[in-house]
Amino acid sequence: MTPQGELFQLDSPLTGEIRGERSLMAFPFFALSKNAWMKPLSYATPTVSIEVRPSMRGVATIYDKEIVLYIASLMASKLDQGSTVAQDFTFTAHDLFSVTGANHSARSYARLADALERLQGTQIRTNIEAGGEGEEGFFSWLSEARLQYARSGKGEKRLKAVKVRLCDWLFRAILRDRQVLDYAATYFQLGPIERRIYEVARSTCVDGEDLEIDIQTFRLQIGFQNQLSNFRTAMRQIAEENSIPDYSLELVEEEPDEAETAGKRGRKSNNIKVVIRKRSSGSLEHVKE
Image 1 (cartoon, rainbow, N blue to C red):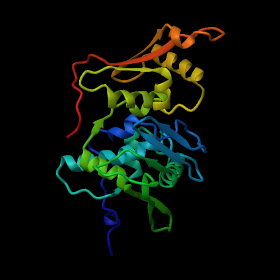
Image 2 (cartoon, one colour):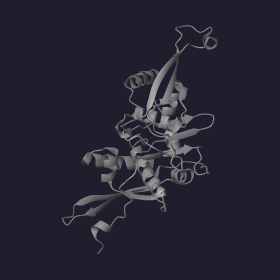
Image 3 (cartoon, rainbow, N blue to C red):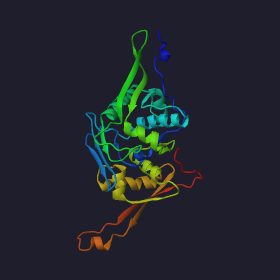
């Protein structure tokens, strides 16, 4: 009989830092919500298109993304060690919770099951290529997700491991493109909007470059679904609190373009530009190779 401790060959615990794939940082693939988001999401520029469709439990959220980041980090650590990697990963919920800062309550385990279901059920279509290949049609973040239990002598179920299969698109991106960036240790303590601001900044402000972007365009890249006025209010508060790890955020008001506003009635509102800079801390930006 196989000893219970050998029932599951684990890829965890994670011993390195949390890392994520650069495209997942730069673009809005996840709903900025703790609760179920039942509406489709979309994002489009002249070069990038993203369409996200909800499952019966809604679109995968920025909090569900923690699982994807954990898997990406396990994979990146294996690649760093020169180990062979496959799309199947097995890890403990305990280690996932320890890394992301979740408590180890029964409620956290229930949320884990819901998150896995959303990650498997959410449908994504994008023209972003991964590993030198593009895909037509939809894919899910996880093509397989299972909670594996063992029975005690009294017949009680005990969660031993989480087993998932990472989608082809993200697996190729990490394996071949190697555009994998580390995350700040305090990322999981941030709110949804702050997480997205950090990710966009981290994926953009490399090699000492600043990010300067108009607030409407930035709102779309963040994936903020409510009105622009609400986004402006949230951004002003975040800028005042100076709460983005490693980056400073400034809102710069510009005079409205006279050519654009000529002949228009009503009050002329100033344009707002978002400026994000890397804080001078002596640390170097780097992409994991």
